Structure formats: C-alpha cells, structure tokens
Length: 436
Image (cartoon, rainbow, N blue to C red; front, side, top):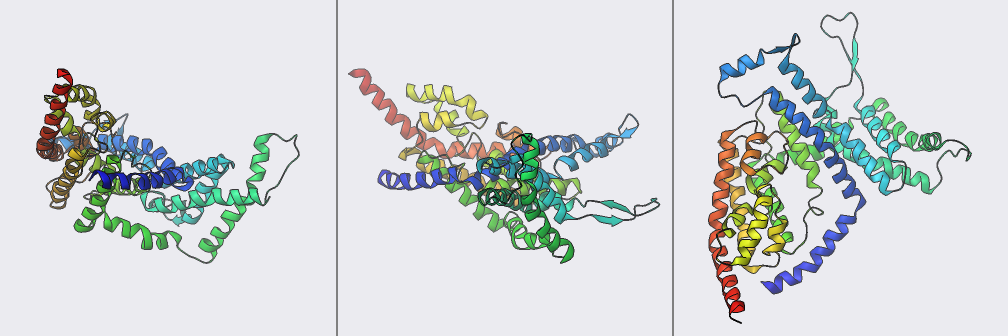
C-alpha cells in the first residue's frame, strides 16, 4: 500500500496543480463562491418565511402576521426570489469579472456585458396583468435563476475571451492619451460588446432560437437527473467522496479537482429552494449541504469521529493532537488532524478515511430517497456542526439532525479498531523513546 500511494502521489499532485492554475475553472469557482453569500442571505429569508414551528396552528398564525400593515411571509419570500431567484445574473457577472482579471482586460465591462447578454437572450415578455389598463412588459425570472445557471457560466467565460481577442488583434477604439481612463475603457469595450450582443440578438430575436431550451435539454436536465435518481446520485456522490478522500490521503487538497462541482451544487440547492418556495418537496441530493452535514462531518473522511476517539488515546502525542484538532473538527476544519496525526500517507487510517464517508453516504441516500429525512434546500455556513447544519439546511428537520448524529456514531464505530491499532503503535514508540 505505501508503494501504491507513492506512485499515485506525484501524478495526482501534477493534475491538481495544473487544474489549480486553470483560469476558466478558477473563474467558475470565483463566480459561484462570490454568489454564495447572496444565496445564504436568501436562505435566511426563506427560513424566516417558513420557520420550523412544531404545529400547523402555529404556522398558520405566523403566516397571518402583518408588519406595518403588510403580510410578513410574502415580503420575506420576495427577498428570497430576488436573491436566489436571480442567481444566474450574479454568477454571470462574477465569472466574467474573475476571468477578465486573469486575462488582464477590463473586468467591470466584462461583468456588465455578460449580464447584458444574459438578459438579452432571456427577452422581454408582454402580458396583461389583472386590473391593468394596458399590457405590461416584464422579464421572466425562470431563466435568470437556477434554470439559467449554466448559460450564465458560458456567457461569463465567453465575454472575457472575446475581450482578450479584441485586445490581441486591436479590435478596439483608441482615444487620445489625455482622455480619462474610465472613458477610454468604455470605448474599448464597445467593439467586444457588439461582437457579443449583436449575434445573440440575431439568433434569439430574429431566428427565434431558444438557447436556454437547448442548453437545458442537453446539459441542465441530465445533470438534474443525475442528482435525483437514487442509483445515479449514489454513484456520482461516491465518485466525489473517493476523489476527495484519496487526494487528502496523498496530501493534495481536492478543491482544485472538485471545483467544477461547485456550480452543480449551487444549481441543485437553489433548485431545491425554489421547489420548497413553490410548495413542492426538494429532491436533488447532490448538494454541498448533503455532503457537508451528513457525510463530511468534521471535514473530509468524517473526521469528527476520529477527533473524539483520539481524545481518549493512550499515546500522549495523539491526545495532544486531538486537543488541538477537536474544536476545529467540530466546525468541519480538519487540517490539524490530517497533517498532525498524520492522516496523510497513513496506511493504518487509509481504509476508515474512505469507508466512513461511504457508509454515511449510503445511509443518507437511503433515508432521503425513502422520505424518512428531507433533502437540504437552504444554504447555511459550512462551518456549522453537522447536526445543527443538517437541521437548518433542511428548514428545521429533527430527523435530519438525527441522521447526522447516527452517521457520526457509525463513523466512530468504523474508526475505532483502526485508532486502537494506531494508538498501540504510537504508545509503543513513546515507551521506547522514554526508556532510551
């Protein structure tokens, strides 16, 4: 096993290093992560609109509350729709801004052009609102929320590339040196803007091509099906867990290789939130919240269990590491354990570090697919302890908190015999050192 780990280490480190420097993957990560605070705030509004009250009578009484003469719940849901229901706009701007900075082109123009392109292909609809004298014009929101997330990513990547080509081949209007820089930047963005917006306008408005429909048919819908179907979602999440665990065992941070998953996790959790807001049950399991609060409690490898066990170790060195790492592990930060025990390249802990999250994944998928535990639909801070995060991410489900606790117990049972072996080895080494 050590020889196999040695052979795997350098190639995977090379791959992770290359991906870590890839500008497009980094731009996607930055755009998605930049939008997460808005989704988190929107989730707080959703949680306030649908609080975990124990009885239907209390929920009905809460729904009837008025503040300053206005119903409270619709006002809270309106904030949720703006923050989560328009997530594609925020992601398009963030991705374009990040990639433009890496290409050394005007980032602000890139972000604005990406948003403008998204709104242009979305189009304006005209309808007669009840009681209105004449038809009203409005922007449909369906393609500006999670349904338009992949289109936002594509536009966010495409616009800076057009700007880069325009800069490389001098497709830009240059003004004299005495012109203020802000004015010069606006004119330099004119030709890239025309190159991006005019073809999209022709394709969508004149030719009538539904770009959102094409993308949803061939990309979004398959991704959602993979996150919903019991067998496929188990396989997808299993692959994620195996990649994460193996990379950590080699001392490689998995964030670079798993960066593309951030967009899918955001798509799924916002889809779940929209479903709950519409009175439906969330059904997409492959979210960061599912992994974080039901499978990766304490961090990758479900190491909250390991930290508890090490606190009772006979070896003083293991107890010392546990005292340092237990509190961070409670908040899902396990680097002190991974590099302090260490877990990296540790053959004794190789199997439980992989097996514990796999077992937790199995119980989680079974519980959620059978309806025993609701699927997460709210974004909450990833640093929350597992049961508390599970409770809040599911809108206040005690069953979810209970499943998180059960998974921690299962992980503890899996780690126990391996920690005992490690403890005996370390105690024996300490005894030898003490006798010398």
